[in-house]
Image 1 (cartoon, helix red, strand yellow):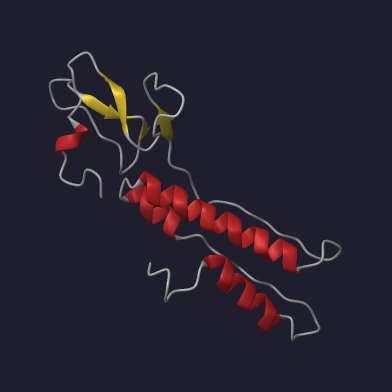
Image 2 (image 1 turned 180 degrees about the vertical axis):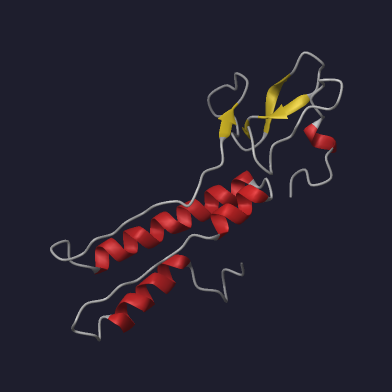
Length: 140
């Protein structure tokens, strides 16, 4: 996303509400944070979390523009992706980075990682965790 040329989800939500308000019979607006799932499917934790924040900002903007007396805001997800906080990282450690620890085979692992689904890093055939820093899409 180009932040200088593309509107945020909150900005799109605000514009949609302003346009739809012209109808005095009420409105229905569906706003989706669809890129959250894209991040999860590509094992891009930071992207998925950033997109979640964008959805939260859109909900906040909508709530600020609409009356609580006659507005229902529903936030839901179509499914989930299981993430786990691994190891024993110290306070202040980058949760999106590599753990300061290694496993019993001295392989580094991510502090926050997927425990199932498309982004899950499966053990190799001999039960050894792959070195995440050597994976093709590491850090992307």
